[in-house]
Amino acid sequence: MIYPASNLLPATNEDTCGPYFPIYFADPALENLTRLDPGLVTEASGMRIILRGRVLDRHGELANGVVLEFWQANAKGVYRTPATEGHEDIDTWFYGYGRMRTATGAYELPTIMPGAATGRAPNITVTIFSDGINRVVTQVFFDTEDGNESDPVLQAAGEEAPRLIARHDGRTASGAEVYVFDIIMAGDNETPFFDDLES
Image 1 (cartoon, helix red, strand yellow):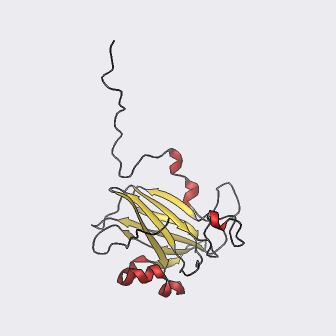
Image 2: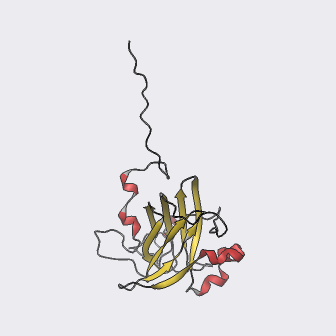
Image 3: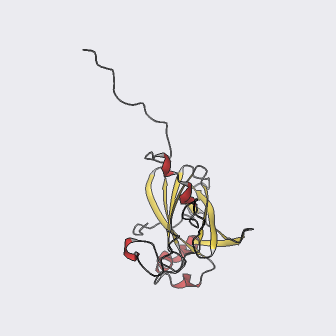
């Protein structure tokens, strides 16, 4: 009997982020939180914003092959979870979860300004997957919000707290407020990351 030399599949080309995901992993419907589904004409309630920025390595270069996941409360400060099912302030047209993959390290997320959850300032949790790391988590706050001074995460960050705050950068022609937040993965100005944040 003759056996083949090997039954192993050939190795795939190197990629900066793995494991490999099916095609639907890059779902355009998850790249715009203001719309529940591209086929629906309804939209999430709340002030439209665009969160944009770059993911940078320790040398200030764009980190390529990055996957970003976003998790936030709706405009009334309520997260959509099994525990809040049936809550009177749930927005039927807003899930609060987004995901995108960026080949260049630059990102742009259309969403709504999150409301302040109990004891918190408005924020968006961002999970980053990239080359050499399994997962890091941070939170983005907004320089126009009053609750920042008392938020426990910002207080815990101490002198590094300004690195968690997105700066207002004008308004689009369609009326969305623009905020800029760069994520620095390592080095002197590294963005604070947290071990104990849920995302």
